[in-house]
Image 1: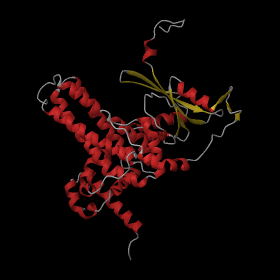
Image 2: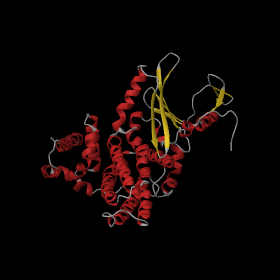
Image 3: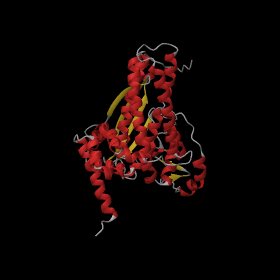
Length: 408
């Protein structure tokens, strides 16, 4: 009796999971490639992605997959090399990601060529200035990763596909660390150290491009609906693009679909002449939006179910946000390595053991103050958390008193 397609699929996924388990147990990749030659050569990118996602759901540490995901790609290299890039119209989020990858490769190639001749000596002008300029361009890759984290990953999470946000985000952070180290060596004019670090950085970025174009993007293209891609596209401008300006060709073809597909809803609230009754007074919906937008702080509200339900849409946010974060579990809005801290804060608020969690960091010359406050209703029931973020360099510098207006 022939096995059903579902049972074959389950059986194959178990075999793939066993390959990864053996790999993490220390079995050489070459040995596994020979042992499982037939199954490996007929494995699709989506099957590999689903396998890693299933392992994480079973409790396999995402950090372990992160450590060896390059080796995973090596094991499945032959089958993955057959995978073509998803063919999308210019303006589609996948097309934009791939165009950015092409520019990334060009920048890395140029930087490597420029730095190679300087590896045995201190960087000197004007070569140093030219390399600094090109390296600054490379740092724009941050927008590429931010769009993945804030736009693509939430859409995949909605499909119960959480592997990328738990593993790839960690790989992004590794690349960010490589960028910081290379930047430091460049600023200190340490030519040989910069060259070595640039090689490490370039290798990490190229491996990420391989994982994106051979696994992530093909899988996302099959798992996500047109409406999901429309929502991803709508939020992209809030993050920005690395080096390129996307075409509007894809959007133009789907403009009518967007109009027809969006549900027309209005908030349920007690209103009087277009105003919403609050504890003290009335405000229109527009006034509430303007008030929250103009506050000199950034506010994010997470409800009692750990879902992000609001953020203030400041034009120059300290930390990037996009509409895709709405409805997302707050744990998925942070790198996996810091999720335990998020859960500790939430649990302490639920149990009413703490009434504030406070942090402060320094970033790009700014002193950033971050506070979390629990929200309870009139009955004392836990209703969520407010995150308040503020750049306080000016406030910290204040001395004495000012009792009169002085705009000079």
